[in-house]
Length: 262
Image: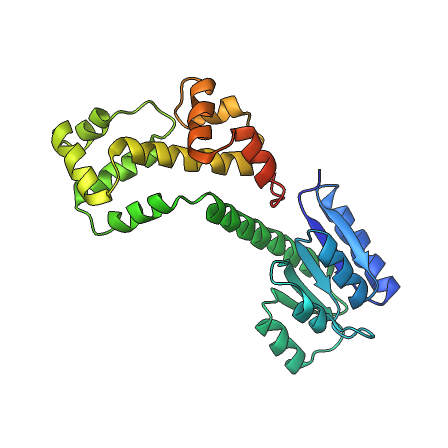
């Protein structure tokens, strides 16, 4: 399976195929390199396929490269690199306004092109991770962390300790001992400041981590259960289903259709 899909749009066959050959050699089979001979064809591809990196010429017949960017749907968001034979300031300014990563002038140096595409892949990975975070976020945890910032030092330290030891079997007493508080007092203080019980916070934090791993890795459900601090896979699946309304495998199948980082 390919990591990324890179689309090259140029109405000049020689330039288009030259860039394709260069990127195919660089990608070594890790990424899928596809082409379009004009803006109209590019828009059709963008509407039907997930494109992570888009390299496009600006001046093309019928639909220009900038028009392609303007016509893209909001949910279509490849990282864009402009390649143009024209050092036009107005074009460059408009391209930057449309969120273009870089504006390269033809003839492009091989090293410069590869360096820019590598950066684009990194930016794409970052965007995908941000999407995952948005997808797995737990509103109650967000509210808890909103409470976390103004909290007193012991609770801040407790939350950091919990987050650093999710894969371990930790109890309220373990955390209380770590921050040198009486367990009963710590339990009351945690609920008062975080607005969740210790047990609820720990479970929700582990479930959030599990969802992230289900989307972003090929780890088995058993491996994820262990990574999230659960001794038995059966209990993890049962708890996950109670909280999410579906099994971990069902969640993974449904969610990974929207992501391409696995």
